[in-house]
Length: 119
Image (cartoon, rainbow, N blue to C red):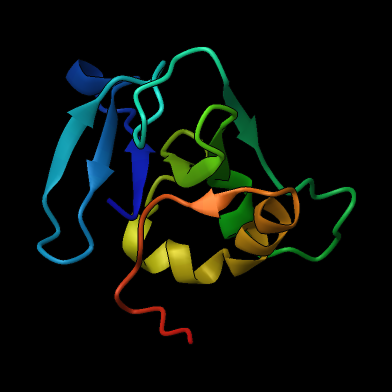
């Protein structure tokens, strides 16, 4: 999975769904566990603060990095209550600044985006 979305639809409100960037399928995942290693004790939510980085695009307000202290990985988390039309695959590319900030804090990416080429 490249990331996850927390939905706001009436019957699914608050549920987290992981997204596959290859087939665009999604599946439910518990919000209290790391999606990489399954640990539930060291989950942290990180984000880029608008006050510390003025002029950020609106996509940053709904994007968070869910990091795990046990395996030192992270995945992006998008909340539909903050950004109604968040798409984990497309918005992953729009929030590369979040990747940089979390990477500098010592975490590695938990899922790959096939549209992001790097060497």
